[in-house]
Length: 181
Image (cartoon, one colour):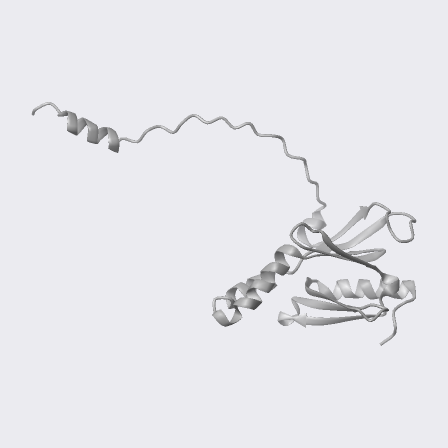
């Protein structure tokens, strides 16, 4: 058998895998995030916030802090495969990634926008009416809050909307602003 030629050696060197380059990563330590066992399983969170509230007394308790229900996005993504449903799919995606709702012991906060710069706060004392509209066999729903000045605030695709609406009603009743329906 004749010795391998230079062309055969060049072909075999191209086909031979080269070892990966030696890379060095310097990992910065990440801050620890601690969650209680109940907070990991649900979006209802009981936490303490600073007392920057309207009354200025004690700490503010956060009852619910979260965004739109993930099922709303999933259902709209499936239906978005049709071109007819595409605008509603885009609206569901924007709700899922941009909107955040927070119900505390003093106020309702709606944060929207990519940077979270658009923020709306209103106290329970300005809430005379809370209405719920279930969606998708009651898995999530809309909460419609009417304020004293006639403004209607629509909170769309809220998870556990019945519990959140009942909490909002109880806090408004405690403030003495809820009108019986």
